[in-house]
Image (cartoon, rainbow, N blue to C red):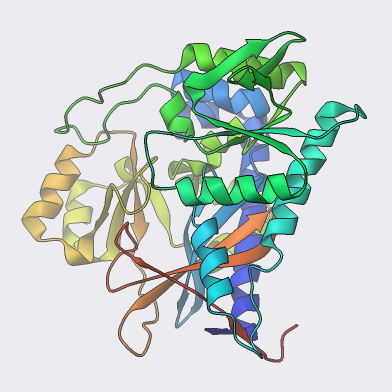
Length: 383
C-alpha cells in the first residue's frame, strides 16, 4: 500500500524522466554520431532507430524506488515492458473499500493509444481494427500479458492475431500480417536487440546460438511501417532509450540538455557513466559505490552490484565486461519496509503519462525471483 502523496511523487519522477528520455531521442535524431559513437549501436540497431526516429514510445515502465532523498529511477523499460498482467489482476483480487486501484485506467489508456494509431493507419477505412501481437512464442514468461492484451482488444471488437517474428508475411496492398492476416497495428513484445545482431556482453560467455539479425522479418514489418500501412508499438526506435548507455549520455553530456531535463536527471537518476569512462583502479577502490549494467540486460540479468560482490569477483567482472557494452551506475540505498524488504515501484507510462503501478518486493536486487505484489493507494492530501 502507498499513500496518495507517495503515488504522486512516483508518478512525477517517472513523467519528468520520460520527458528527458524524449529529449534524448530528439537529440540523437539531430546528432547521428551519438547513436553510432556514444551509444555504440550496431548497424542493424541503427537501422531500427532510423526506421522511426525520433519516435520511440507507446508504453513504458519506469523502475522507481523510494529513498530517504526522494524517488530514484534506476532505468526505463521502454522496449518490451512487462508486468501488466500481474499489476492489473493482483490489484483486482486485492481490492478493498476505501482504497483506490492505480491500475484502474491502464486498460482504457493503452487501448485508446492502440486504436488511435490503428485508425491513423486505416485513414477512415471502416471495419474493425486488426491487431497483431508479436512475441517470442517459445517463451511462456510473458504469456499472461499477451493474453491480457488479447482480452482487452477483443472486448473492443478488434481482430487479434498472435505470432512470432517468424510468422510475419508480406501481403497484397503492400501490407504486412501474421499467418496471412493483415495487421493495422503490431504490438511488439519481441526485444529490439533480438531482432538485430547478437553477441555476449561477457568476453568469457559462450557464443549466442542465433547471432544473425532477423533481416527477412525486419524487411516485412519495417517495409509496411515505412509505407504507412501499419504501425508498431513500441516503435523500433525504442532501441535507443532502452540502451542503458543512454543513461550515461544524460550524465556525461549533461550540457546538451534543457534546464528542465538537467534538473530531472540530477534529482531522479543516479550518476551513470560508460564503464570505459572510469579507470579500473577507481572501480576497484570504489567497488561498493557502483553497479555494473550491460547495454540490453533485463530482469536483473547482467547486473553486478559492487556492494554485494567479493573484491576478486568484482575484478573478474571488470575484466570480462566487453568494451563498449556496459555502464557503471552510482549505487543508492532504497528505503526498506518494516520487514526489511525493498519495493521496486514500476510506474507504467502510456504516451508519456503515468497510469499504473507494478510493484515487486525483494530482499536484494530486483530480479526474476522478486515477488509481484498488489499495490493500492490510501487517500491523502494529493489528488
